[in-house]
Image 1 (tube, one colour):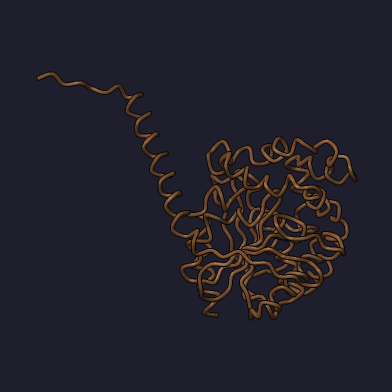
Image 2: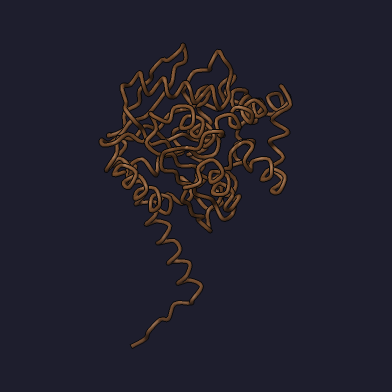
Length: 315
């Protein structure tokens, strides 16, 4: 009998392909199973139309995305959270399918709008989870309206005035200064939105966490007139946001707080930052994660977030 031995490289290639195909099949199955259970709604508060997605039932959890993203950044997290919670993923004012605010775009402005949205929906105390830009917005919401926020979670970013400037300098985050120049980046990026977005998605695209089809989904809104300008307006409002957060931080957060950092993007900076304004903050760093934590490592994130929310519900 003749036996054929497979070359180790061929075997590793096959195993890698099978692992990738299994992961893609699992993601497709989860997406198919839960897509029909998500509902898209719009609510107008203080003249601003906010688009949001809802799934599940239980104590409410509000997910706030970063830039350059939309509610869609939470697509891998929503199905699991929705098993135990009523999950709301909101497009931030001026981004995604939400309308622009006549008051402009800033952390405190968005936080107050979101609390008005919460009240309009008749929600009681909510868990707030914020990634990237959604992090300082979520903090401002929790600090300005503490009676309405059950817990606060900060992901992958330090707060203005509490470590953000240091991270920008240490990591060479050039875009904060570039985006602050009025009108320049809008002109340079017009018609080149994919190039700009893919630059920031780069590491997550290399790992397959963000795929070309996902970029298409983000581009559906970011390529619209004025969408990029609204995002840059948040960066340009940084001085006012830093002052607003400094004022809010005079009172420590009373609710349970969690901070999660990314080992390949900022490390423990979120923990050190939130710990200054909420000394009882618990936290962790997901060592092999880049900045786009909810998309790159949703399982690792959920392993921290799920028990934290359950404990906060019991407190």
